[in-house]
Length: 301
Image (cartoon, rainbow, N blue to C red; front, side, top):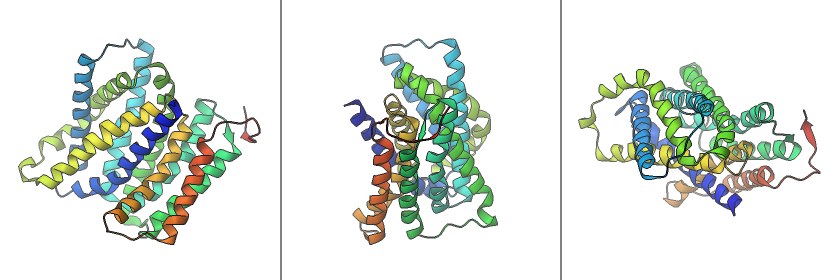
């Protein structure tokens, strides 16, 4: 049952993330600059979990773990969010979707060296299948632009991807030790301290009165959906599943975004979409299936 809940949490989180690329891009830079969005995103999350802190039973955190949570905040909040929004502002949603396919590969590498998680043949095959399916969906919707005009943005998104992969690996032991709300509270508290000097000026310089209601709805989705809910569900899943299992679900993001477009009549279901869905589902199955002794190790300690 725990595995089922963890996988449902990941499915929900990545559905939200799949929609976030287009929704967040629609806010920038015409209405809010990236750093202003980050300040709103992080500060509201801190307030929400601060309220939960006073409502729910308190959980004491060891001092050495507070330092670890601060490190997680650097990679999971500060670097991750600043470079994602700044990079997306300078790049395109398609470029970002292509670049983030590297996350499961980086998770596999980081988890091997930090958590001693074994790299198996099935995991590698699963990641290759998932990446192939994701790329089919992404490239079918348009070609990526990796010219000099978007180079800086693309580099930022790649660094964001590496930072997120490292965060998922580093937060795993803490999620096994503490409640999800406790971890979220501390990670975003430290995250706000780190991003405040870089984002507050942009926030105060924003023309909030000129922002229409539909854009405020997009901001609300980014804050409550892609931050509070999706981060929480991602962290919650790590209580049960490995970072590699968490990472493979990223390949569902472009597929989910494509299916939502079909659902609302903005796109049509194609043979490519069906083949991509089969590849992604096969990849997810191979990575999430229970461990068996017959798995061949590609790397071992």
